[in-house]
Length: 305
Image (cartoon, rainbow, N blue to C red; front, side, top):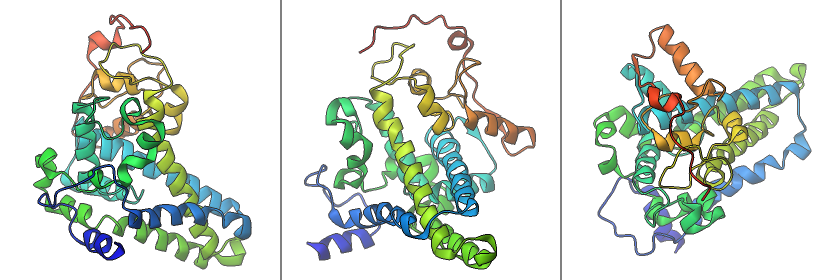
């Protein structure tokens, strides 16, 4: 069983010719790195914390969250704005350092989610499959393993994105090595070490992962529904703050093409603010706005589902 799983893991996850007998079957070989990075967080009880390690962990959380929200989500999945090709590659690499697979895999599954939100085909619907499966079970299953290039033909035309998607382990591995090297270089003079930096890199990665996963799970269970979408998507200020604006999920499902997900002026959307700042210096070429009819609040709120 392990040999079969290992061969499947080593094979390209772009292949479409291998049938999936049970899409909800979890391949436990894929659990090893996921569980390992969680267990590595416990080493913080041994190595302790320094302000350098904590600061790096927080910085990596924010920067990589931007790679997911502005890069993987709004740029690649929804084409909500356009950038030069080298900026797109940089955002794809940045998102890849989060250890949440490649941009093509991520965008393909997200587009599928929007086509079938909260329907039986939605792989991470808490309404259909339960909260914990929607939070973290779905992406460990055979049904979600392959990068569905047929859903992202626009992205699959770019060989640099295909390469990053194929070797998606490379960006987080390089970042982890850089953190270890930084801690080793700073050393006792900065009250840190390579191992300590690696542990806090793991903590940052785990917190980042569960914050991102919460959009699939929490945002279809708790929050307000100002727009009468056909699914259970909701808005939640707390999730919006920790995910740099992704918590305005009901807004997003009402109009997914907008670069801005906080439709009202008071709905904090840090990812949009950063993309807007990039547009001021020429790194972003075009941004899809929120339609006036949605910003004016003319849509009648539905009863909560």
